[in-house]
Each structure stands twice: as C-alpha cells, then as structure tokens.
Image (cartoon, rainbow, N blue to C red; front, top):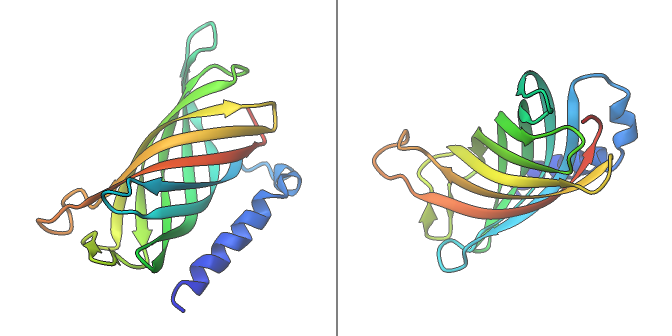
Length: 182
C-alpha cells in the first residue's frame, strides 16, 4: 500500500494537466504541462515509468537575430516507476534547455534533474539509493499552439554518490504536452 500516495499524486497532477485553461490564468511562468510514459530495454531492467510534468520558463535565453537559440526551463515531474511486480514513486526537479525558434514546431530538449524514489529495488535490480540523477535528451513537436508530442531518452543513475555501485536505468519516454506560452 506504499504506492497509494504516489498514485494519488499522479492522478491529481493528471487531472490538473487535463484542464490547462484554469492554470493559464495564473501568470506563473508556466510553459506547459503534460503526461508521459516509457519503457526500459526488456533485456536489461524491464521497467516502466509514467508521470505527469510541468515545465516553467526561466528568464534567461540566448537567441540570434533570426530567433534561433537556447531557452532555459525548469521541469517538475511526479509519477510511478514499476516493474518486476513492484511499484514506486519517482519525482524529479531540475533545469532544462530548449534549442529552437519561437513559432517553429520542433525543439530539441536537454536537461538534468535530481530525482527521488520511494524505493530503490525492483525485483533483483538494486539502484543503490533513493536519490538519483536523471539526464535526458529529446524532441518536442508542437502540433499547434496548444498541444504537442514529445520523445526523450533518459538515463537515471546515482552518479556514484551512493557508494561504489552505480547501476543505471535507460528509458524511452513518449508524451503529450499542453502549452500556455511559446
């Protein structure tokens, strides 16, 4: 029953994400909200991750005269990591960089986050600690001004801070985003 709070948090975040009109009125720098899910390579860990996310615009960016450049963002997510008959909460917070041009539908997305897990063992796979780092690289495709699709490859590990063992987890994540700002 330890997973009930994480599932409840995921459900509440998903409901908020499905009603973006209410959030758009709050001028908080919120760029987008979304949901995503993904999987690891079955030969390695055979884990799945599902989460809800929010992306906030940060004030720093570097752009050329044509508009191409790098924007800064902060990402926040809460979700569930499951596999081998076990489930646990995963939450993350960290900076990201978007490479693209306002109005252009495709954006490259890079970032690194601090992550917290409610458990570090799934079956016989031990990730050696509940504090982890998640790095990612991906693409965001805006279908129109309000909705987009996303893919990211992400790597989670303890970066060697939790002792000598540093097992990692690679995931392919797919998502849908609702946008409030360019």
